[in-house]
Image (cartoon, rainbow, N blue to C red):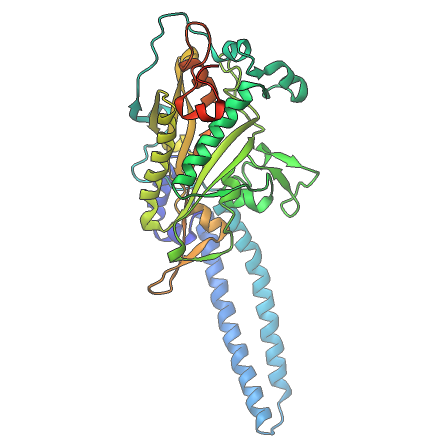
Length: 425
């Protein structure tokens, strides 16, 4: 959520920054509401000061054994009524301002280009595209011929967009997760296994609600914010809420977490004929990294997360590229995002397997997540950052296709062999 004070003091700067993400930005109404809010607050403060003054006069008269004039009590009653009246006027104004601010996306960083996917920039490329001396198969054919994935029964159980891992497909999937967990533990991140069912406030803090509240799987019949529950679309939605409403100590930061969860998505995107198999689905496995940090260490934290995600893909020996996203391709909550995109030979294109993002203080403001400076005890908002480390549903197709041999078998990446138990599937 954006700071109304920032909008008030730097209106044009904020407007121009948001136009990188939005078609139009108009602060006229919210600034008028903010002006009305501040006037009412000043009037309420004046009346409260008057109430305190009269109250002290009454106490003084009583302490001296005097008799309090009825006019004093009448005055107190009138002041109290006026305060209640002004507070009643203030409440809906504050709600309207809050609603407006919650609907705004995060401000993109200055170095983030405007526009959508057409303005994404490749930062670096790792490895080379595989060059096969035979006719390569796609991941769907490889998964079926090696008895790794059962697409038909997945659809029978749950509908389109679901699949079943079986045999060495399940073993390979679990090996990937073990590999990720082992590497994050080595780097000193704390392992979290969060609930998969979350409340409305979790989605609001993450910046997904209220705008995207219809894009999650809801639980039960709770439709209103006070009793709505949903299945998490990513572990980020849980991790960003671990310290909601808390004031941390500066010396506690950074806090570094990672979590394993399945991810559940109602809107899996627009399907194309080429996006068969596991490229898009309603449920997939992912390990998510998350950091809470001070503003001055925020950029370094993002570089760390990018580096960790890249290292995981490099350890698998897969060809990929790192891209910096343009403003409209970043999610609403993020100020800056980098995607690690894996090469899928049969599709002749790259697919994202990790997004590393910096939300700055946008999510922290929504969730009131703050820290106290050690030196001067000043309270500030933390910065929150997240990165997939990693999602498996596109890694598996990449491994099958990039690591296939002429016999249609799969060479197991070396880092996974201790869990898979063989060099080749």
